[in-house]
Image (cartoon, rainbow, N blue to C red; front, top):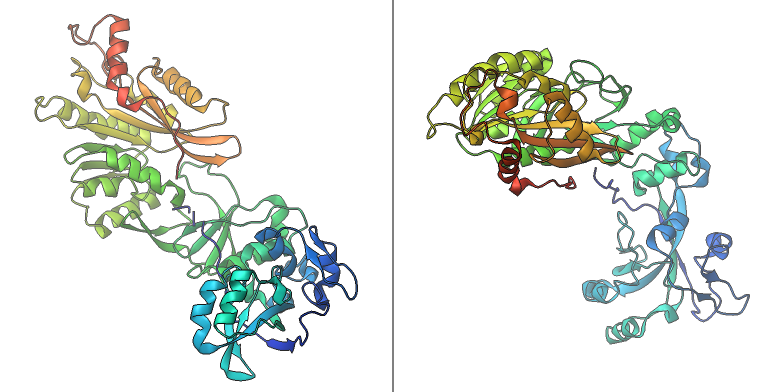
Length: 508
């Protein structure tokens, strides 16, 4: 899921074949998770069998994930499977159970939280096939072996409710439906290799980025993702980086439908598009909200690389004026569609231009008009440049963009420019690269926000700054306000950004 969007994978609640075996004498030797598991558990850390005719002892409880990997993992013979065979995942495990009258189950379960089986997807209380008036409580096979395994408080409740502490065992048949997707993939992929446990959800599409060692299993992985996630009907894998002018990438359908037309809901807004032809990243939901919250009604937004509208539409809903642009004809088409879908088409002016042409054309024309307004009527102007691979290069379009006398510093446009960085100090790196393009230092007059970790040693960041008048205007007319001594001017600029001190904030 990650927003991205990742979510835990579900289970089927279907409980399959059960077979009961009573243990008539609780004081006799009972195999530690029953006969079929004796050999495995005798080799497990913290568990010791003391021999025939003697009781057994346990060390402190094994962690849940370690216990599950031993008892509730898929059969070992599925290792190396490349074509999914769901029937191969059948497995029978022996579970201790306690027989109780059905009318006291609810009262008893509150007191047996520790002892009851805690496996998601498997009911802890089932019908007794031999007695309609009774129920069977499935117990944790790593905690409950005999009646002596119950704690004093638990035994006291059993006595009060007139329940015999006698333990029976059941053969519980697990199937493919009872295993989590991560458990299935861990059992199938080569031992010790990373498994795919997450993906980006884009409507009905699961978008994966598989590693080389996972590729032989790609169809199986795709099908497992579809099986274990309600609403997912197609699984795709990215097969190249975003390196073209339209910001989309090639993908292959691993399993499921070939349909890439999808609908997503983000921050109360609906977007429709062809995922194979446009850029969409659900992991940027928080960032879309963050920028939207910076603008107030009446402000103006220029969205240079607008995509299908995740910045433009929420901002327009705040009664702001929006100019949105994207070079990709498909993005342009779906941007028009989504503005109508969200009823903001009258508030958004949409363009299909190269980013530089948009800045030096429509943006320049609007800035001339906006910055010539009286102080009382001047809006706050924001420019969003969400093209992390190249956006910093487009900053050069601001150099001497306007003629005439500079406006007051407080009305200069605010830029939010995105970039990737692999530097050990990503904030410093982004500042230096942006400053180099603009021909100024941004050290004292910018803030840097960490958007998300893209890959090991690769961060996505957003640098925010007001375009200095010395960059934006050419042939400036000298006046006291705009031609102060450089140290004083840097001090005033820094003060203007005092509420946005440099920070590296984690993206949720």
